[in-house]
Length: 342
Image (spheres, one colour):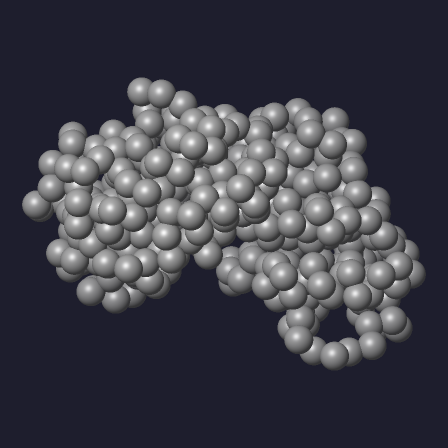
C-alpha cells in the first residue's frame, strides 16, 4: 500500500530536488493540507492505488501554508492546497493561491453551492453548524433557528466559542447574506446578551458545557458530537448521550453548511495530476472516506453516510454558494467587534 510522503510545514527544507521537486512528474502530486485528520491518509492511499500517482504531503495550518506558497513563489512545488471552511479558502483565493479549473466531472458530481463560480476551489465535504441542547432539562421545541439564540428568553443560557473562530465567522457571513449587515449585527448583540459565560474553548467544549449544565444551548459543528459518540472514553460518550441535536431553520432557508475544500495551486508543476486528484475527491470512494473518517457529510448526493449521520435522516441545507461566506468574512469580523463578541 502506497503511503504519502509526509513533511511538517515549519520544516525549513530545500524542496527542490526532494520528494517535492518542482519539475512536472507523471507519477507524483504535491499536496499542502491544513486538514489534520489521520483518516485523510486513506484518501491519499486510495488515490495512489487507483492512479499510480504518489502523494507527497506537507501539513500546516491555513495561514502557514498560504504564506509558504507565497514565499516560494514561482518555485513552489505545491500542486493542491486543502483546507477547511470557506473563509480560509477565500483568504487563499485573495492571496492568489489558486488557479481556475474547468472539469465536467466536478460540475456533474458536486452541487453548484459547493463550486467556486470561477472554479478556483471546490467543497468536498459538508459540515453542519447545529444547536445542541440539554436533553434532560430543555425542551427542544423552544428553539428552531439560529435567530432564536438571540431571543431574550434565553438570557444566560447560550455557550459559543470566540468570534476569532472561522466557523463562527462563516455563520455570521451567512446571516449577513440573509438578513443584511444591520440584521446580522442585531443577532450578534442578542447572542452576546444571552451568553452563559464569556466565549472560550473549542466546539467540543461547548457541547461539554451543555452536558455539565453550564448552559442549555450551544453551537458547534456536527462531527464534534459524533466524535464524542465514538470516543474510547465513557465520559465522552456520556456527554453525547446527555445532549440533543437541533438542525436549525428547517422551516426556512435550512441549516448553515460549511466545507472541507481544495483548489489547484496557481503554479502547480503537476497540474494534470492535481485536477485528477480533485476529481477523485468527488468520487464515491473518497466521499465515503470523508463520511466515515471524520464523520462529515458527503458533498455528493446519494453517497452512503456514516451510520450516525444516516440515523439523523435528511435535513434541509442552506444552499448559499460557499464563496459568499468568504466574501462576507471581513464584514462579519467587523460586526463581531462592534457587538462586543470576544
